[in-house]
Image 1 (cartoon, rainbow, N blue to C red):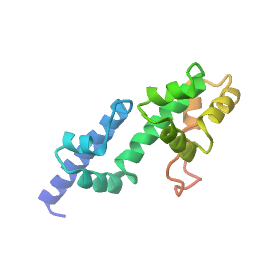
Image 2: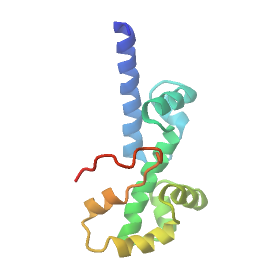
Image 3: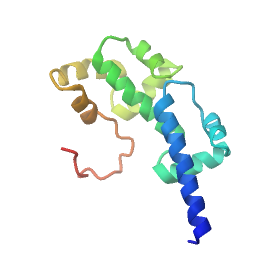
Length: 148
């Protein structure tokens, strides 16, 4: 790869990191691929393709994973209803939220809330977050090294 091609690739990766960081920061805001693409001055199609190539999932999937992670934490806390959690994390449709939550977590939000309260009783929140984190890429190796 020539020097200018390497420099361009590094600029593209920096742009994708800015998009990912924006999703991480603003997950509860109304975000769509078009708005994210405008923020880095590329087309929505180009952003989607480049983001998937770099991170293994589309910007929308990444956004929904962040929202579901936050929803899981709020549901473990137990002081908000499923509907309140849905809107707090930036979802505008309870049906879409419940469907995505069930796809990622393997159970409905209300079932998760009930089971998580029982399973994480007495566990520090930082540990509970790590062990209950949703895994979108089901093809990832199961025996990956742990952080313990």
